[in-house]
Image 1 (cartoon, helix red, strand yellow):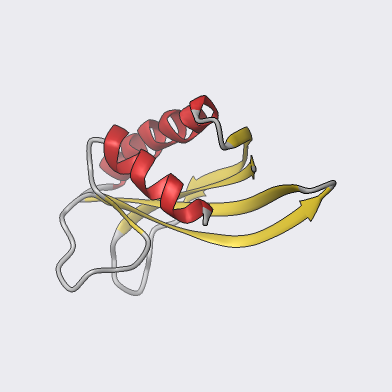
Image 2: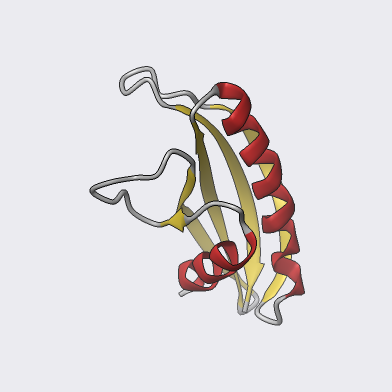
Amino acid sequence: MIEVTILNFLNAHLSVPAYTDRQNKMPASYVIFEKTGGAKKNHLLSGTVAFQSYGKSKYEAGMLNEELKCVVEDLVTLDVISGVSLNSDYDFTDTTTKEYRYQAVFDINYY
């Protein structure tokens, strides 16, 4: 399950905690992610993963998004990851909860 590999890598390399689910009490800054799709071609797996970076301000969320993108790109250093490509990233502030966040979507190839 690629999510476990990503979660462990993020928590070892990010300056904030990463989660796959919201917790009862979330810190001021954190990253949450989910695999939104996947495929298999010629026995190689790929997944589309959406990462949301939360911060106390739009600036802080944006800076965390930049840190996150660098860390996610470093996933290629793992033997189980064969490629990482940024699909898109953008301001994704939640107007309902008024939480500042950015979202980065990556296509990740893995074994």
